[in-house]
Each structure stands twice: as structure tokens, then as C-alpha cells.
Image 1: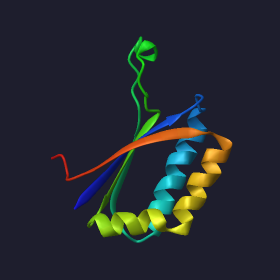
Image 2 (image 1 turned 135 degrees about the vertical axis):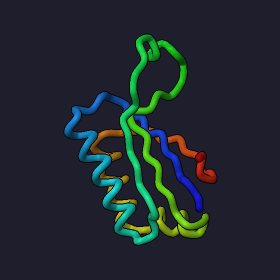
Image 3 (image 1 turned 60 degrees about the vertical axis):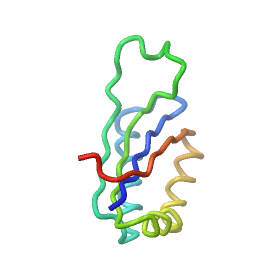
Image 4 (image 1 turned 180 degrees about the horizontal axis):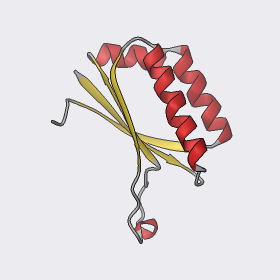
Length: 105
């Protein structure tokens, strides 16, 4: 199994309902590929003063589990996934850092 963990950082703060919708849209698009074994998403928990650190600070974390690297590539090649990404990038630009790894626990 492969875990794909994304750190999503929006350029500007999003209202809670917008962030909830983004996470729901990403989950639906990924699950619609039929390749996702599990999906989890959580909001970043801010620490006072972290905005002064010169690093990308995530708005949310998304973790998707798939069978293998081929399934991961196929999931991200799915048109519905790109549609969601493109739509959200146009409305609320964001950056993403990610890591592909074996399960941590």
C-alpha cells in the first residue's frame, strides 16, 4: 500500500465553509476514481507565532491510500481530479507539498 500525503497551503485564509467544500470536492474526486482505499483530511492546527517562520505552512492535510504507485498515478491522471484541482486553483490559489510513502503506523 502507498500513502500519498499532501500539505495544502492556500495563499489567503479561506472561510471554514470554503475549506470544508474544497476537502469534500477533493475526496469525492479521488474516491470517484475507484482506486482509493482510504481518504483522510484534517485542518492544520496553528501554533502562535508560526507565521514568522520562513516555511510553507499548511492550511490542511490530505492523505490518500492506494494499492501501489501505478494506482496513484492513475488516480491523479483521472479527469475529474484535474477538474477539481483546476477549479479550486482558479478560485483560491494554493501550493502543495507531498510525500509518497508506506503507512506510518
